[in-house]
Image (cartoon, rainbow, N blue to C red; front, side, top):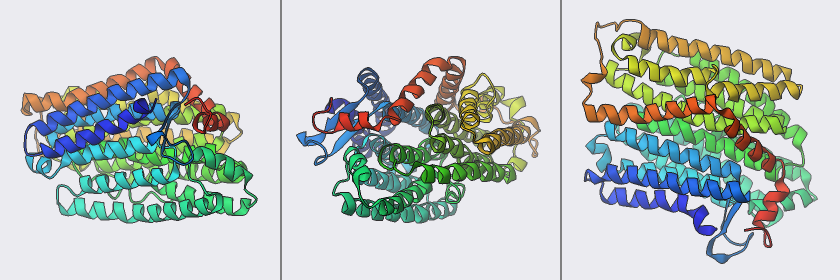
Length: 500
């Protein structure tokens, strides 16, 4: 099974190398899209294998766990790899309409696929140190993409982004070192056994808190989220879209993996902290969005707000709540990446993202307005779109678990999300352009128009499909939740003698 679990990693890395070699040729973009499509096929094969077998495990080099490098796909990992590949393909196609020759020569496509490699590796690794390595791969690639344009805003955003993420990385590495000193292992399945058997549970709790903070920074949890709205509105829209869709979700995934598999001995304390962090993240994020007047800044603060829903599902730690967290992850990646892509087309037409200086898009570009409404309504939780089911499951789980404050907060934040989306609609689409311009889609060259709108339409269609036919997706999320609540099955699959 090792080739099945490693292929979604090998393909984007090979694509990065090839696209860098052809960065001065028009073939670079073609290689990028082809590689993204191939990764999606490989991710689908991995998903099928994992759905059938429960786990797909690869021991690299033939070294059994816990001594070698282990790649593990359970249903959560597999679905995250699939959604990463879908987002990667959509953004790769969109980038052909936006990324200029200068950025291509500087290695945009190569950095983009290195980033996809890092994200995929983080989802598939079965080892904490290798999780750190994949975080570093992501950090380096994302910083390169942030500053690729060389503008003052990009460099300013890149410095803020890297500064706080480096603090997170150092804390992560220190916690990893302490955990290795305590247990003598960093394989997650082995740690799940060693941490429970440790006679120094006080130190285990301290290490768990260090990991919570480190992953909380990556996930943009309250009060550690300020780097995100300070940086995500600065780079190219293709970069913003892939960041918005994927990067914070790796942090959420790491939190879920750590606090359902490794640190499960003091559930009451850790999950109570996560519960309040989730509530405050939802509230501060949505209030930040309400105070902004820039298309991408509003969307950036909403990333923070929606992260709160996912972490709330983990904090409640019930089967239904974890089902909601997994479903929310999938829904939000699709919707948020799509909204940033829409903002890119709006910027191209209206010549800006400041809502007070643009407008008229509903009258002159009704197709774009329609494509905005689908992810916007989904983000706000309107039925029958995917966001409605995601919010419904998390809120229902909150009330069933007796977390009435969290459930009420989730409902209020949903209402305030409607306000923010309505503000974007009223300013960018409904009102006339303040300079009397009439931006039309046909003003964009046909090739660029198709390359920009095709991925937006595809992601919007996926949002509608999930909303109209939620049962199979909820079933997948439910099965993933059941696996998360049964860490012994993960241990049996990874350790020698397991069904690898």
